[in-house]
Amino acid sequence: MLEIESLSVNDRLDQQRLEAEMIYGSDDDMEATNDYSSEFNDVENFTITKITAGVRDPNRVNVFLDGHFAFSLDIAQIVELNVKVKQCVTPERLKELREASEFGKLYQRTLEWLLTRPHSIRETSTYLKRRKFKRKQTNRQREREQKPLLPEIQDKTINLVMERLLAKKYLDDLKFAKFFVENRYVRKGISQKRLKMELRQKGVDEEYIKTALDEVDRPEDEELLKVIKKKRKKYSDDFKLIGYLTRQGFDLNRAKDVVANYSEETSDEL
Image 1 (cartoon, one colour):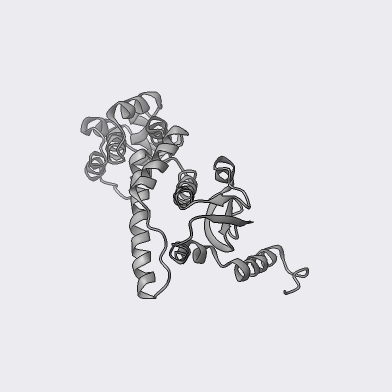
Image 2 (cartoon, rainbow, N blue to C red; image 1 turned 60 degrees about the horizontal axis):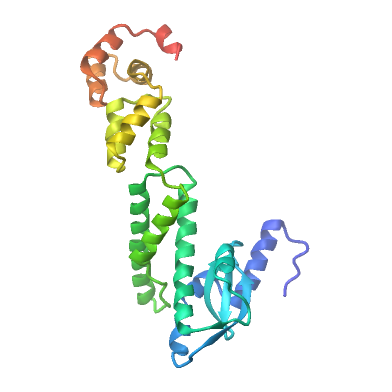
């Protein structure tokens, strides 16, 4: 084993990760290990012989049955499912734990994605379907390269992830609509018509859209002034500027009035 005292923190972590992978294999290798179930098809029961910390994700642990890597779980699942070393595992129990493993990984990845910014229910459903499709593509490539396949993402698992996110309030279309209306093009300006259109495209109910627009203070005239200030130099001709504003969803008559009364002093007040 290499000496690591003189290495930087990042180098030290990389060195420890590589050493762990030499012993236990990489996360991808572990996830792709599907020989275990076929190798022990005739075995009636298994025994949990070792539980080790995850190599890349400290919130997950690797579970070994009879000395072979079998699956990984997050720490909460270990407690919830009462998984312990020396515990006997039946084939039925193994199937349950592996399904929990796939759920835990997909749920964690989706939660991390959601925490980057709020997303609607439809967006999240689409994200999960994309992950399922990407996994299929990855497995086709791995098959061509004669590598072990990763577990396919099942519709049942996707549904469970959505149910958990909804139950935990990580998905809430009303909150999402309010966030979207409040933050979309704050500096550049945007019409209510366009906000409505974009929220509809994201699958938000009309009732939630109306509530969000009513509660968030974004007067159309102020939004018009923001856009005019941004585009005045590009559209020096009033006719072309008004045409641009109407294409962005603003009312034609309001656009004419605001453009006619626009001045640099007025825009500086925003």
